[in-house]
Image (cartoon, rainbow, N blue to C red; front, side, top):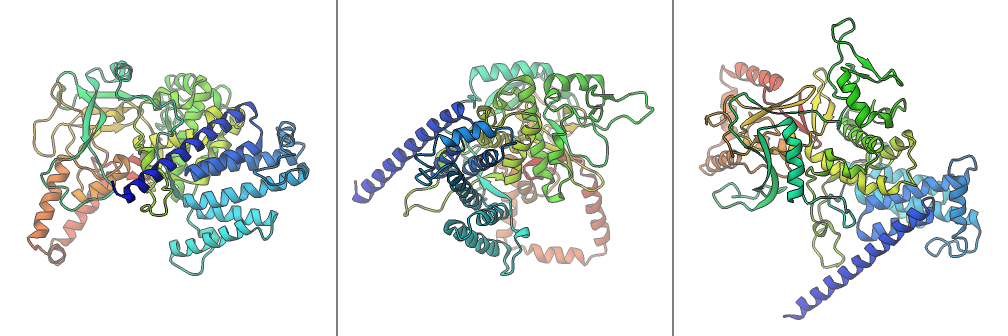
Length: 591
């Protein structure tokens, strides 16, 4: 073994020992927060631990809760003033991370505020949320003018914004505020089940028996998808695979026969045009029609399309949000925020289900077993060594509003103590739920403006894997319906034979291969590698290799007399999209 290999092994061992020590410190601080949930110093210390572990998003979350507690200490009229002030007095002697010790509570409070602003600014910068990071720099510098760390952070944020916006003159209001963070099963997450165990399969199949009696969930192998299309990947070499769950026919299913009919409590809407049922998001019956709406008895603004939906909502989620206007936090947003706010509404619905059913959010049967497109912690980790390669590419969309303030505001509206119930409502739990929603949620768009207005997670429907030559198709009205296709793309006999896998589709399968792959990438976690995609892509590569000038062909077609008819046909196809399932920001959509 060379000296270089020895040094590398020793470095890896040191990094492992450092990570182990940090995880132990995080565990101790989390336990301390259970005993003293209003101690802002513990939140600051845990934020530092999260930062050193390479979780800037979790560091920002802890720093924000600490900042909220500084307000509780300052204002005697605030709900948690007494307990927060008492907890802070316990740190008078030793201070906060070596600062402010022995100088009194007032001085300690200023040290705490400055620490919070520093952590928030730097952590949000590392997440890519430049606008929010800059705002906390400005707020911090108002409290601590000339603070060196905040000044340096502000300069870096502005320079990075110039590079991102490709202009020297920048307005902080225009700074990017959507970032990316780690998408993983956190080392301390004890709720994630073994999706491939006999126990899991037994539970899922019991649920399937109620909504898809001819189907069974089994473990299968799928191609391992990547973020890039490597030259030659569509040739005939064997693809690497990974274990996943799939849906299989346990008896023959005829063409056009219903495969699955599923309703989900994880259905939300932000419609500004049509009144929709609060439970299933179907349009409400017209006034005077035979079918009558059913309002909630306590908050008349919440209306259901039927007594069944009313009763379903009361059993699963509504009592936690009744007459509290929780959904208003994520509605009436700018168009570019629509998809993110639908995900926030899904998160709010999960939190309401958790509170109503008195169950941990990650134990909800609607989310516990679904795929989260998680990456291994090791591949997400920030390398310690200065000789290491480039930092990892994080994949979970993140913003200060959607991941930190939005969920906390919803919980506050539900009258849930966000400090005392940290075990249920910590930021890593929100991130885990988002990971699962972004891999499995589907959406309906408004036909007038094309914006997504309804989103849902159907945990059994999403067991069916994707193929660009599917043997089923789906429609989402009051319930998610899956049925066997009447014809196949490649001309094979329709229907699903006993033992055959149910293959769904997460994109418009009428599109050319490259467009399909781009469209479905968000839902699949990488570029599609189904047989159809690989065959069509290989054919395109062969055509390109033979020197056919596609640009010249397009130019020639555009000059022909049929150009108007071709354009008209494209326009009609775009409007109708009979198999269309557009995907935006990780939400599969149907019109």
